[in-house]
Image (cartoon, rainbow, N blue to C red; front, top):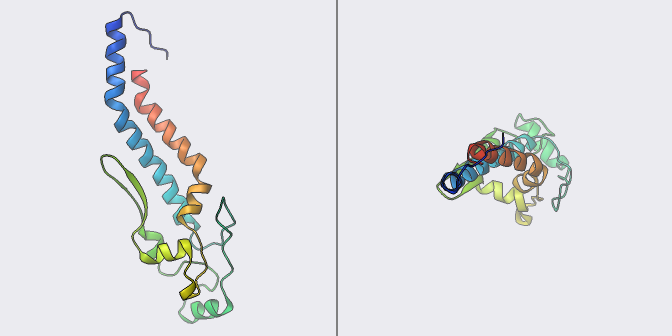
Length: 153
């Protein structure tokens, strides 16, 4: 619906209202986008992932790792999935001026970039999730911001 103004005062009032609500709308939109990325990250755990953007495809688990996983009672070929701790560690946090998606687990960073000392290849979870979910995250962001601001436009 188009909004028509009958005076400078009406126009100024609408712009003032838009400006007052803009920050909150953007922050909620960013939260929606971060939730999309978080969901993509969580869903990637347990299945081999193809290359995306600068992130290479996930390497096949070594035969030794697969044997170890079976010995411990886990599926031999579900990368990064054992107890669910890693999957459950991905969260979205928001404060007044920022929205953060990620994991507080040290091993999440090790997996993201790899750790040669542990013979651990990089299996990007979060970086890859940003690339894969970018359009869906942006769409969620834009739709939420528009939904919150449309009454002022």
